[in-house]
Length: 295
Image (cartoon, rainbow, N blue to C red; front, side, top):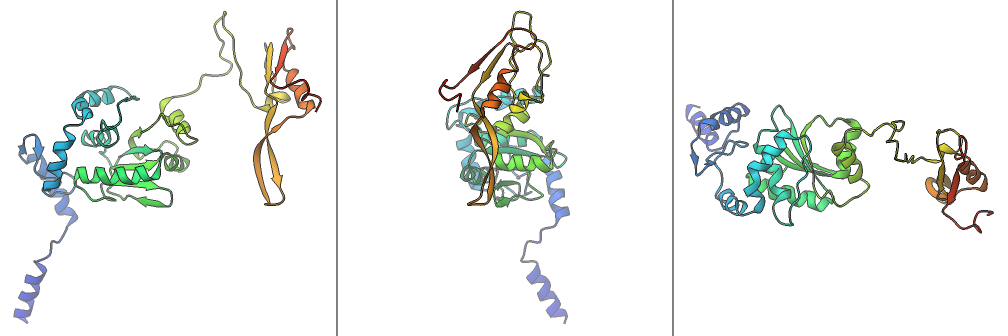
């Protein structure tokens, strides 16, 4: 039995037993690791030495234009709540900027960094590329979240996700408290999902409607058809009537109720024109022909 026990111990010693306590100890010991050309020898996320592939990719990363602006970007990020970054295609914005944020320590206290992408394929491919650059496993420290697939975990510090998934997370967590920094990539590609994201993060709060303008200026009020009967605004002189309204329409063939843009009735047109001329003379400009009005 003694021989069998010793053989069993020797067999077990051939495997690498991963202990969470050892990993945490390794991460703390990384602070005392010597640097070679400014690059640490041990990966802070895995507690293991960097692979040769990491060093090869690092040399290519240093040639990207955004690498030269790393310190300047981090200073701007630290001093401003919102930062707009503009760069040419292929300069490294999508892959390098999120890594700069993670390396700067914005993921402490179990916080994450999110980077939105307009397409699912981009979120998947970019996350895999960044995982290679950070020398980690996809789905661990770097992950992605798309519709019907969430490749992230409790260790994830950097997550690439579609803007639609970010909005879905905002439904359960309106303040998105799990994220310390949120990066809206390709913000110029305006979609139904990116516009609410831009509104949520790039602006604080809309000014009150009743806030008075300058004496020489004009106040423009944009309203739904609720202003026809349920709302009265003083001082309206001109009314612009596009002649359309969104109405709920039931389709009995497919048994679905949808919200469609439909022409308004003549009674609604009169109600809209009645918003002007209450306290002083006014005019109504209808954006349709006179022939269409009686119909």
